[in-house]
Image 1: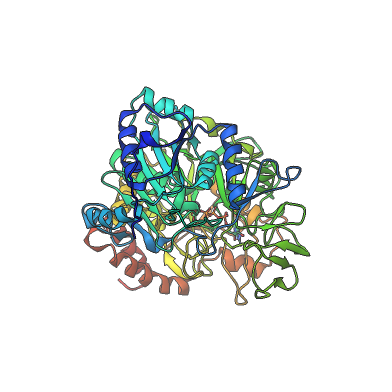
Image 2: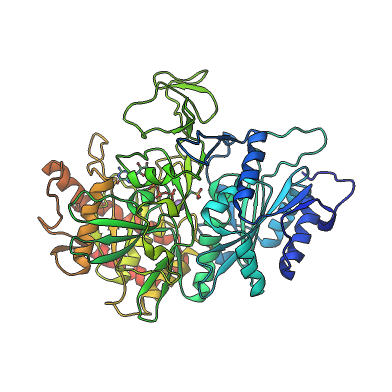
Length: 623
Ligand code: GTP
Ligand code: SPV
Ligand code: MN
C-alpha cells in the first residue's frame, strides 16, 4: 500500500537538525532513502545527552513512554508497545542471498529483486509525517583493526534512544567513518505507519505487515513494520549476528549468540568463557553470575553477542560488539541476578512492556517474592496481585514474558576491565546449552573440537517468548544461532570445523554442553540453577586445567562421582543423579532425532558430522 504524495521532496528541502555528514556514499544513500520514504524532517544523531533529553520529551508527548521516578530510576523510561509488536518475528525474517542455496534450509529465503519489488512500495512514503533519524554506529570497538560501521535510518525515536545504549553511536562514530571514508552497512528501518493529513498518531506505531530482511551479498538491511527489539535495533541481531556471520565466514572469524565472562578462582587464576544459549535461556543470568561457592568470582564482558577471532598466539579471542544489555525482565531479581538489578538501579535505562508501580518504579513477575497489591500492567490497565488486570483474565501477567530492560553495560558493577580491550579476551572454554526437560545432562565435555562442534550443531531447545509463536516447542537450535545464521547452516557448521583446524588442540578453547532445565516427573526443575551454576563453571575450569577426573561416555565426558563440587548445595541425591546423569534410554531416542535433523542439511552436511553421528549410532547399537 503506497501513500500518495503530491510533491516529492529531496533531502535538502527538508527541515534538518544536527550536523549532516560529508561521507559521499552515505549522502548518496540518504538521498535515495529520503526520495523513497518522504519523511517530514531529518535529524542527524550525535549521541549527546541533549539529544537523549529531546527525544525522551518527544516520546513523552506522543504517549510512547512514561518517565520513571527519578529518585528510584534516574533518567529512565518505560515504553509500552502495541500488544502485537512484542518479540522478534522469525516467520517474517528473510535472508535474501542471490543464490537460494546460500540461505539454506533454516532460513526464509526470497530472491533479492523480488523482495525489493515487495518492499519498495512499502517504504514508498512510509515516513510521511515523521522525522527520519540518521544513526551512525559501530559494532565493536572503534579502535578495532577493522571497525564494523553501520548507519541506521529509522522513523522511530525509541530506536534512536535504544541504539544509544546498545551501540557506540553518534558524532564520534561519524567522524571516524569520514576520516577513513569507511564502508558501512546501510540499515533502513520504518515502523510502517506514515501520517497523512487526516491521521492522528498512536503511542506505538507499527504495521501488521512486517519484514526483517538481509541482503547478504550486498550487506544491506531493510526492516519494516515493527518497532521492537531485534526487529528494529538493527545493529544487534540483524548486523552483529546475521550480516556479521556472513562477513565472518568470508573473513575467517565467528559471529555468535554468546555471553562472555571471566571466572576467577580463589587462587586468582582467570578463565575466559563464552556460552551460547538460545534466546531467553540464561545468557544474561550466567554472564552476571554471583558464585555460591566460596572464593570464586565472575566478571562480565557481554551477555548476548560475541565475535571470536584468532590472535597471533593461536588462541581464540572474544569481544562483545555491544555497549549495553537488552535483557529479559521477568525472573530477574536480587535473588536470581543481583548484578542485573544493580545495573538498572544506575538509571539511564529503557524498560519495555514491564509493569509500573504507584511510586513510578518498574515491576515484573519474579522481581519480588510477593506480588504487589496494585500496579499498571504492560497494557496500561490497573492490575492487582490477586485478581489480575481490570477487564482482563485473572491469570494475565503484569509484565509481558518478553519484556526487557535496556541498560548501559558500564553500569554493571562486575564489568571486567578487559571489556575495554579492542582485541578481547582469549577463551579457555566455550559452552553450548539449551532448554531441555530431559536427555541432556547438566554438563558434558566434548572429546575434542570436532566433537564439540557436533554438540553445538545438534543443540536443541524449547522455544521461548523471545520470538513470536508457540512457546515450549522443542527444536534444533545449532549453536543457539538458528534464527541468526546469515547463510546455509551446513556451511556454518563447516566453518566452525575449519576454524578448529587453524590452531593447535592445546590452544583451542575446550567445548562443553550444559542444561540447567532438566525436570522431574512432576515438571519441577531438578537443578537450582542461577548462582549454583558456578559449580558447573568450576568443573569446567578444573577440566581446562586437567585437575578433575571425568567419566567417558558415548556422549562425552561427564563428571566422575564426587567430581562436581556440591558442598553445601541443597539438593537430594535423587535429583543430583537425575540432573548430572546420562541416561542411555533417552539417548536411544535422541540419536535418530539428530539423524533427522542432519537430513535437512542435504548434501552439504559436513562429513565430520556424519562421522560423529555414526559413532553415536554405533554406541547405541544401530550402525
Ligand atoms: P536473550 O536476551 O533472549 O538472548 O536471552 P538470554 O539467554 O540472555 O536469557 P536470560 O538470561 O535473560 O534468561 C531468561 C530466562 O531463563 C528466565 O526465564 C530465567 O528465569 C531463566 N533462567 C536463567 N538461568 C536459569 C537457571 O539457571 N535455571 C533456570 N531454571 N532458569 C534459568
Ligand atoms: C533474543 O531474542 O535473542 C534477544 C532479544 O536477545 S532481541 O534483541 O529482541 O533479539
Ligand atoms: Mn539474544
